[in-house]
Length: 577
Image (cartoon, rainbow, N blue to C red; front, side, top):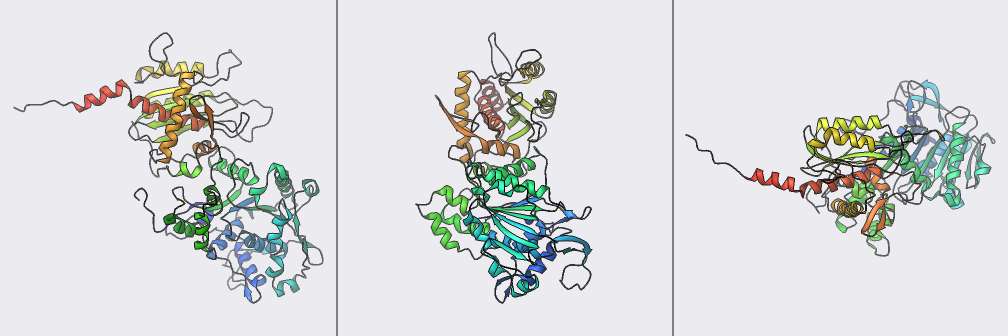
C-alpha cells in the first residue's frame, strides 16, 4: 500500500486464540471445551430482555469457547486467569455478566461426562458436559462501587423467569443468592483485608486500568489471585476486563499486559494467562479517511456502536488524540515522556524480512553485570534493517537475595556466531559500570578486549581509532563526546521511525524495551533512559538499536566506505582480440 493511502478494509492488530485461523481461513476453535455447554445454558436460562433468549455474537461465542477450553489430558481448564481488552462500549460487562451467571448456577465445572448424539443441549458429540458447583461464590470486584454497579445492575433483567424459579434466585443490589443461600454473587470493592481468606469460585475484575496503588488496586488484585489459587478444587479462575490503559500509571492492567508480553517474549514462564485484544493497527491515523474503516475493524461484532458518533468524538478538537486512541482505537498510547509509542514502533515491522548469510552488518553491544539488561543488536548496511541478536536480564521470578549475573560465556557465544554468520564491518561495545568482584575490573572489559583481538582486523571502522588508547571495539559511553554523538542518534532514530525509514523484525523484547524508554534531557538535547533509576522496566535493547543505527551511519559516512563506493564506480575497458 502506498504511503498515505487508506485501505478499504483495515486489518486490526489482534491478541489471543480467538483470532487465529486455519489454512482454510476459518477461525480455529478449541478441541475440547465446556464452552459449548455454556453457550447452550445461557441461551436457555438468560435473556437480552423478556421474550428474547440470550445469544452471543460470533466473536463473543468464540471467546466463550476459548475461555472454557479444557486440557483433554488432565480434564482441567487450560487458562487460570484472563483479560479481555476492548474499546469502550464493546459490551465487556454483559459478556462477563453471562459468565458470572453461568458460574453462579450453571453447569460450570467439568463433570467427566461427554455429550452423546442427539443430547438435549444440542452440544457437539464428544464435547464435555458440566455440572453445577455445589457452593458457588462469584465475586464482581472493582475499586469503586460505581464500577461494580455496571455489572450488578445487569442481573435482574439477565435472568429469565425460568432461571429465577428453577434456581430459586433471590435478587439483591449487592448480593444475589440462589438455592437458599448455597450460591451467591456479590459485589466487592477495594478493601483487601476484608477479602483476605475468602474462597470465591470465580472472580471478575472490572476496569483494571483504574486499579492503581493509590486506590489499593494492586493489593486488591493480589488478594484475589491468592484466594483463587487456594480454591478447594483448584478450578477457581479470575477474568479482568479493561480498556487500553494509560502507560506510566502502573495500573493492574498495565502490569498484566507487560507480564503477558514478557511471557510472549520468552523472558518469563507462561503461567496460563488468557489475553484477548482487538486493536487498531499501528499505521492507523486519526484522520477522516482512516477513522471509519478503523472503527469498523476494532469494534468487531459490536455493530451497535455508532461509528459516525464515535468519529465525531475523535475529530472533536476538545478531545486529546491520546484519549481517542485509548478509548476508541483500543491502542496503548505512549506516556507523556515516552520516546516512542508502541504503535509507532510496530508500524516499522517488516514481515518476512531477516538477515541473510553473509550480509554486511554493524553490531552494537550494551553491557551490564546484574541490575540492567545486556543486549546485542545488528543493523544491516544495505537497508538499515534492525535485528536483536540477544538480550540477557535477570528473570522476573529470580529468588530475592540470590545473586544473578549476566552469563558472559553465553553472550560470547552469540558474538562468535554473529561473526561466523554475517560480515560485521563495525562492532562497538559499551562495557557499563559494573565491576567483577574477583579481579576488580569492569565486568565486560576482558571480554571486550578479547573481541577486539579476535575480530579487530575484520572491522572497517574502529571504536577508538589511532593513538595510545586505540581500541577496535570498546566504546565507553561515559565519555561526554560519545554522549553527544549518541544523543544525536536518539533523535535521528526517532525521526526515522516516524518517517518509516527504519525496518525491524518485531523482536518482542526489543519492542518492550523501546516502549519502556523515556526521554531524558541533557546539554545536547534529549537521550533515552529508564522511567527512574530503580525501575524494573529495562531499556537496554532500545539503546542497542539506537547505537546500531548510529554505527551504520558512521560507516556510511566513513572514508573507508567512500573509497569502496568510489572504487566500485570505476570500470575497465577490455579490448577483445
